[in-house]
Image (cartoon, rainbow, N blue to C red; front, side):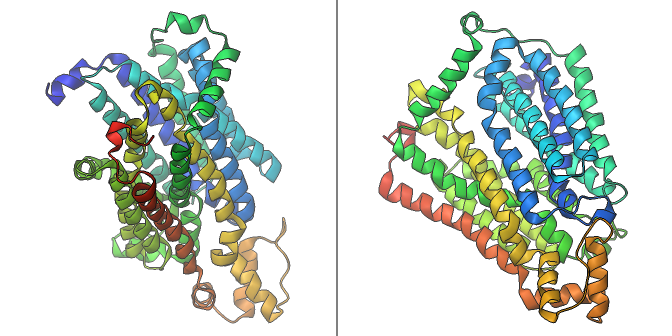
Length: 479
């Protein structure tokens, strides 16, 4: 069947569901890609001025819950109906984005992001389930391909627009996300139709469904070889997540984006750290089919190893220098590595799972992603600050020189601190940045992040060589 005929065969509700996915990803990534900067930039920019450690704990904890909670929220959706849960999710999203843009204290902001992540956890399992319910053997491949495309279109538009507006006023980032979710509210109220449900599921209590979900995880994790594979993948996802946790902060501190923009014929301020993160989704939109056509020629585990090594190289270019064009090259290399490895992760789990336990195994694929988010929060917190945060390194230099500069407070911001330090050190702010770059070598952080990814590739090689012994996983020979 031709692609055109396949697309025509997809029902209306499939397109409605995918449109909601695009808008939800637009709203989510518009805030998420900018969140590291919003939490840590100086208060006089409209940001919150938190420490890198506080940033890491907020994003890491909330993101971990976003991947762990669908175990429960998916069961709730199956029990009470998708439409009701979508209305609940979108209502929580609107409140959550409003709180994120309104609360300014650490405790309240922490609560707001947990609330927002919970809204995402209600939404997350529904659309992928809708794609599965509205496709068949002939249309599922194209259907999930369209779904993945919608994810990345939203993942590009959201940060791109956020990058254009946060320099004007941070409130605009959150209000745009609220407006986009309102569009989803309209779609779910007037265009979404509840899919047919299994009668046996309607007779099962919610408590029993949640119990069965946890029991299934325990059963699946009894396979020690599978657990070892998931543990290795925690390293990969931890390295991958630095695109959101550390990269925007690093670029904002050390890379002259106006110089990059000038070389591209753009006005000052048109290229931002948040906008750069959107390039990852942009490259995926245009290159995924090509990269997948190459990766499909290799065993999933071998494709993952290669992709992770490529991603490791991308992290090196992203964090090792101040040249904007080299950073863009790093994002391109990073995205190629992601395209080669991330889809193969899901495919590999599907292949190694016994025929009667495929759903159980696929249900545990979120575990390393959730665990990696928490670990990412730790590595991108105080550890990152001590190695690569411009403000933290400046405070060290001020202490060494015994300069008399007030501590950051409600009335004396990070930017005030930097300006006074530059004056007392008889430097301009760009000169101060260069001095700190050469004195403290913040680019060393690439060793940690690239090393994590490279270690994952090495461990996968050893896993394939000595645990699987080169067995063909398509025959479920992991056992």
